[in-house]
Length: 171
Image (cartoon, rainbow, N blue to C red):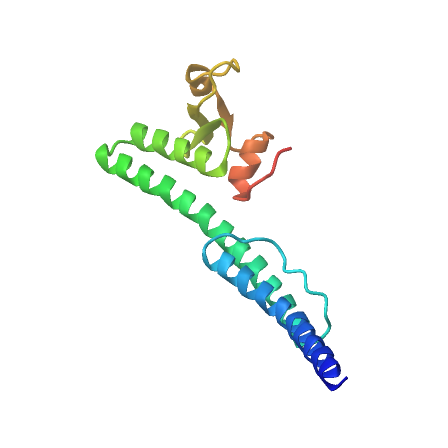
């Protein structure tokens, strides 16, 4: 009877130890995955003790690391575009080339399919269309763009943006 009771106590102790260490093992495994660049989602430990609080803190940290990683990847993409732009600008330093490279880089970095570039001509008090980026197939080419001139004091949205020096989001 003593041996049976001793065995039963030992079984319950082992069971409780496994029950207590399982969440720690889950946290350790999730930490290893995160360290190796494999965020595996939230750790599901629902206890209200210290291990539960640790799991909550780990989940918050993992989410923030993932967000920061995504932000860094986006920033790296922007920097690569700018690096490519600067290399091309250094190659040929003339206004036409610089404007085309800047328009292409800006359109690409923002994620736009097309872009147009206007230059302000203070002598003529106008905004003049100059360059286009990937507008083939939409009926608007650089020849038409160069014919476009907007008076700085006009009612055109473009003139208002230049005068007020504030960006406008057109939907």
